[in-house]
Amino acid sequence: MSVDPRHNALRRTLDADTPAFGVLDNTYSPAAVEVVGELGFDFVWIDLEHGGPSPWDADALEDLLRAAELTDTELLVRIPEANPAMIRKALDAGVRNVFLSRVESADEVRIAVEAANFEYAGSPGRRGLGGPRSARYGLADDYVGTEDAEILLGVTIETAEAVENIDEILSVPELGFAFLGPNDFSVAYGAPGDLADPEVQAAVEAVHDAALAHDVTLGGLTFGMEDAVEKVESGYRLLHVGSTLGALTKTFDGWHDRYEDATR
Image 1: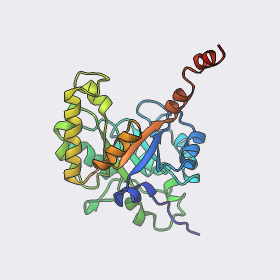
Image 2 (image 1 turned 60 degrees about the vertical axis):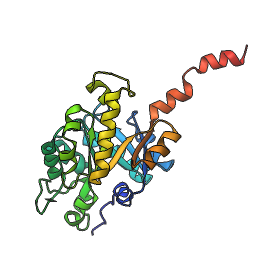
Image 3 (image 1 turned 90 degrees about the horizontal axis):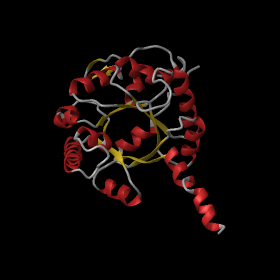
Image 4 (image 1 turned 90 degrees about the vertical axis):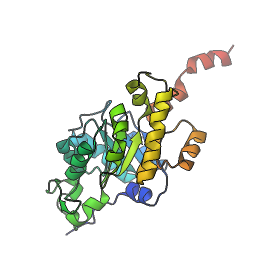
């Protein structure tokens, strides 16, 4: 028998120029992924750069993927480096949306996109062909013929070098999106944590304008509903709205003090 390969709803949303909203799950819990999916978000961001399981741990990724698939959401998996073998490992586990950290050159991006595709820019790609989970263990119908159209590979723009090379980076064929990293910009420009620093703001504006000029999907963080609306109106389409641990701390931080106030 054969089965249909899984389609990438996030890529379809972005291809339609529709905003996609998601939550960072920094508990790395299938249950949390399932809850976020039940709440109707387009994606759950799993960040393997700053925490979580090893990016080589396909078993952990597969459990998170099953929770996402159950609730019709997508995982957006950030890996800590533009390592072709690591990209192929994540894709074979069933990840459809791969997010690269700290890329600084067009060559890095091109090598990564080649690793994610069976065919690339009219030539053979560098994706390995086997029967892993992404191929439904060899049962997927027309796996090779459909897989390249389902993969979305994006980059984080978060260093001064990346800003300097932004036009070349955004010109790489099949780059799925560019995600702005203002927190790391603040470190790169010598103002850790100060997102209002003039150099940080200038870098954000430069990448924003370049992404729109190159017609590359732009992603970023949002800080409240008003900011989310403003970012969509200014051209952002892939938007992080918060985190699972952030929701916990916002709900429970200061609870004991509030209790004491309520019982005085």
